[in-house]
Structures are given as C-alpha cells and as structure tokens.
Image 1 (tube, rainbow, N blue to C red):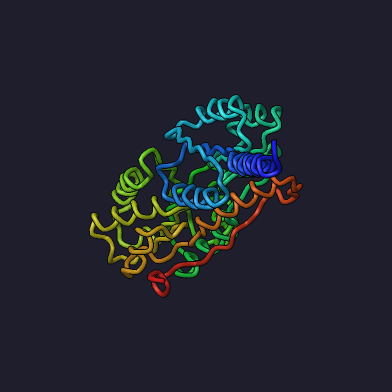
Image 2: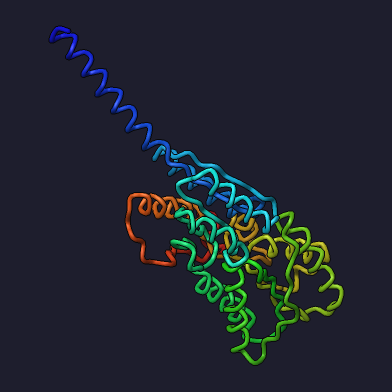
Length: 309
C-alpha cells in the first residue's frame, strides 16, 4: 500500500470515527411520560422541551397516558426496559413511586417537569406555586374589600396545583369576613372547562341572590373559564363577581383583555419550564451533580393592563 493509499484509508477511518462519535452524541434518548397532554400547559412544556432536544440531537419519545395516572408506572418501566438515558415526568411523583424506583434501580435519572418534589427525582422544574397562589388570592381579597363568599376550584391530586389551594386557603383564612362558600374539584378529563361550568352553574343556582358570591378563585385557568361561562349564561356578569386563574393561557388572556369578570391570572413561563427541564437533563447527562431539588422559573401577574402583551 503506497503513501497516498494509506493517507486515504486513514482519512476514511478518521471520518468514520468522527461520524460514529457524532452519532453516539445524537443518540441520547429521553422519554417524557404524562397523563395530562390535554392540558395546554403540558403541551407548551413538551413543545419547548422538544425544541431544545432537537438542537441537542436527542431522540425524544412523548408518552401520553390520557388521564390514566396508574399507567404512567408501566410506561416508565417500559422506558427502563428500553434503557433510555433519562425520563421526564409530568405527574404527581408520589403516585408513581414504583416506576421511579425501577428507574433508580437501573441508574436512569428521572426529572419532574412541573411534577412535585420527590427524593427519587433529580430535580423538579416548575413555577413557584406558593407565590402564584398568594398573588391571585390577595388580588381577590383586595378586590372584594376583604369580605364576601368565595368559590374555590382546586385539584389536590396534582402537587403543583395542590399547593396553590393550600396557600389560597391560608390567605382567605386571614380575612375574618371572607368565607369559602365551596371548594370544588372539577373533572379534568376533558381539560376541566365543561365540568367546572356545570359545577359553577349548580353553585349559582343554589345562591341566587346578587352579591351572594363575590369571587371565584381558580387554581388554574380552565375552571376559571368554565366559571365565567356559567356566570355569563346565568346573566349574572353584572354582579361584579371577580374571577382569577393561574397559567394565563391564550383563552384566559383573551377573556381578561375583554374587561369582564375574569380579571387576573398568573403567566407561567411554560416554554421556560420545558427549556429549563431540558437544560437540567443535559447537565445531568454531562455528569453534573444537580443539588437543587426544585428549580423555579419566574412568573408574572396578568390583568387587563397587560393581557395583550
């Protein structure tokens, strides 16, 4: 073999090695498992995560169990069997402990994307639910002058939402003249709007006197939108019932901008949560020891003054 031939062969070997290395880097496989893809927030998280993952050349498998929380466990176990590099969950980790333990035993890191704290997670990336709930609950208390009946829409089965209800309860409990008329947990299988409307219609029917309901505090936007529909359908929008939500999704922003009963929400940076989760995954895959069990992404209060921004 002459020198030129040897040089050509060496070049091919180096090129092949380079391609193999690049291929290895591009083969990081990450699974996202959630029962909540019907929720707009989850859709935004996942979309942002996938955007960062595409830049990094990851292979991302999004698994939607369509409201079936128990199925998340078996899907996590499936991903462990497939030996993925990392798993991301958007579900209460305490409800899927068996799956998380299987991943931990296999040495596969699991991250929460607005999921909740758990020792089996590397980190949970989320908004500060305590701060968001305090902001909207105090908004309600201030707007109704610290007195009157408030309807609360909560969802204790999901930790990021459960903490919002706890904080709102504490805020309202600090005002002796505010009473929580009802604490409603809507069916979220269809997103939460329809059942929230139905439940709010029943509450309105049971409390027909103007002024008998001063406000509706919702732990996220879908119940707030359902309550708004119920109030408008009952012809009671003129009573000045104040509605607040959390998430500031497009439909909520539109309702707030219209200047009606839905007055305020808190904008979570869904894209920021998704991107920050992807960043945390990348750092862990690079060998970094992530010490923060909770990574908070900033939020912003949305009212009619800035709903169009």
